[in-house]
Length: 615
Image (cartoon, rainbow, N blue to C red; front, side):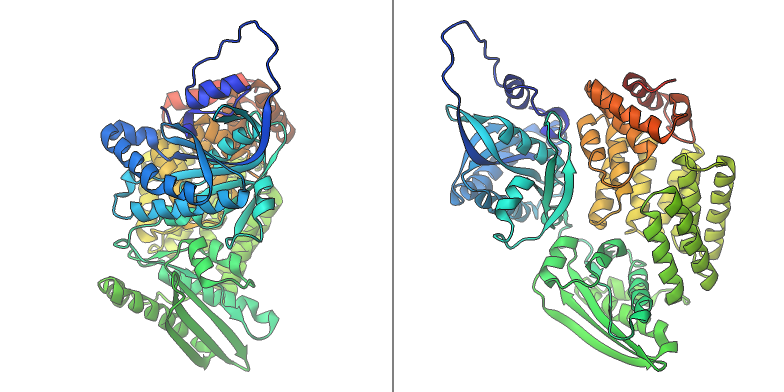
């Protein structure tokens, strides 16, 4: 049977659901006495399926079936029995389970995902059996040993929205489990689900997917640097943030170390959390935390490195120095981390540190502060915030002449103005984007940021091979930069390699679990290019605050591909509200939609045409 995540949809009616979701035979209704009243009950439904099942079956049918059957027998069924559940449907790679309690359903799902992760550790990444799980509490209809109805349908839709290795639950289920399960839940807002009338509140079990998608122990160690706590004057907050950012920057130079993006680690600023929870949520094996106190030209910095799974302290240090020695302290902290982790990983990190070039110290804290403020505005993705971001980037570059990243991000801000249709003079915006990308490379050719910006410019000028080369150069210099990865993923999709783009986009989201919303838009666009229309629509409908013509274009095209005329027309109406001049010619031009292959561009245009966008 084909994988649920690409080919199954929620039912328009009960019989359609049985045929489509489970390949059940059509039931022919003949004339006869009135049917008895339908029996109903309230139940917690767990729906699960295997990520990439069709691909795995194509590569090795016998091996995949044997592995899947072993997982059902050794992991799933014993845990379902332990939590008093009942499996009422197997369908190829899919399974449906009934529980009388939402608490039991969620606890079972968590243990299933952990069990699946444990048995996957000795398998190559492309041969792992990884599940997505959705859970809903709702009304179901009973027919023999089978269950149908809205309670089942919503669980099946939520399963399709779950991350690989993750668990998505409805608001109805969350209301029953909150404060009863020792796990954190992320509120993902309300979602419109296909053929479900009312929006459904969506939550995910925080960090559940990280273990399933984490590298094996033989791969790179991973670390998250939590925001250092400011112990002094609140006006000095930027100083502690600058130290944190500079340590992150120093660690990202090492290809043998995976560093959680600062966007994610800074979500813990000012929050009390257990180290084990932070480690699981961010997918980091090690956590660095510390504090900064500054007064009278002196500073005291404390830092401690902690093993994420156990909470065991590996080392702690205190530095009392003059403020002028801030960069020396940052270098010492970075070197100690590299050396500590390197001792457990063959000394590779220590060697990399010892072989570093001079001049790789930290940044001006005030420059970093302005840069972070600029990124905060740019991620809001509005024309006004984009303009504000440029002012902060300009100030950051002025404060630190060797700081290339704000210049590179300013280049991106001009590109965003152009390809989202915000610029009153697109030609000037593109020219300024190119100029700033070149300046960023000139200022610091040993960082990936300028190459990342230049790659974006080349992409939107349809120089696909050159764009790919520049993205590869950027990643060679900074392999764990999630922003570069998500933009490279879109570049691959536009270049006719959407399958590779999907894999890279998911990697970017794992590296930056608390990613900004443009990651979601990119993933939806790539899913459309990969002809995964339901995933594209589900993803794009998950955007909460990002209102752009580009997002609605791919949403409209996705609905059209699925035959959802009303939803496609509604998306086109929103496009025309945002851009009264919107047309297929305007929004599928090479600079707006830089497809390398003519058939991919026509695929986009044809579905916009079906959605009702004028030529």
